Amino acid sequence: MGKRIIQQRRGRGTHTYKVSKRAFRYKLQYPKNLEGEGTVVKLFNSSAHSAPLAKVAYAKGSFYLPAFKGMIEGQKISFSGKEIKKGNIMKIKDIPVKTKIHNIESKPGDGGAFIKTGGNSAVVNRIVEDDVFILMPSKKEKKFNSNCRAVIGVVAGAGRLDKPVVKAGKKFYIKKAKSKLWPRTSAVKMNAIDHPFGSGRAKNPKSKIAKRNAPPGRKVGLLRPRRTGKKK
Image (tube, rainbow, N blue to C red; front, side, top):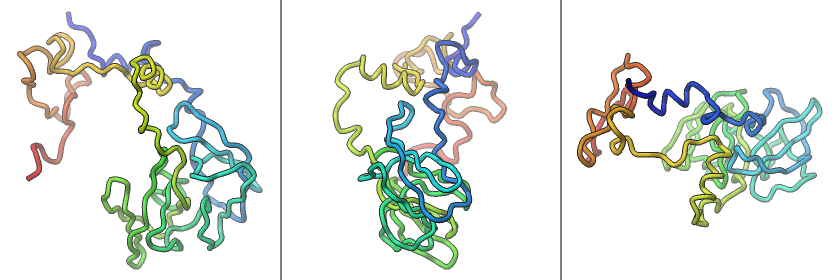
């Protein structure tokens, strides 16, 4: 009788594969109705995030954000002004073209969904009527509603990947903090009992496209891809 493959084991949530809830207790979103200004109360590290976090207090309470490059404790942040200043939260229709921004809302009022990792930023590329086109870090342009909000500036924590990890032990603790499976074993190098791509000499995998109704143990590889093969 075969074993459960890794995807199934992780989904069951055993002690080996358990997410540290404490690391993910900070919700990085700003409230829907923000007016006036807030103050950066505290800057701190979070093992679950690649950037330092900031606690911002305002009239109705407080919320958490990824810190921007150059942020200091006690700094004032404007929520409803028109001033282009690092850390200010503004609607993207009011932000000039070529301005670097981060923590962009996917739809108006959701509190920020895009660009939150250390050292990252997007650029306001062009404004066409009610749509704002933003150049993402992937160099692809994405269309947003003009009423979506964003934070001016670049996320702090750049250079995180510049220094090599060097030791496997250090990599182990980095992955453990985020509850990531490491080291990863290539599926084609496994035994047939451990993975649908297992067995076979060298790298000779079976079909990588999983069926739409495949069970969890078979849903591996490409899950309903739009296309396969190398782009010409």
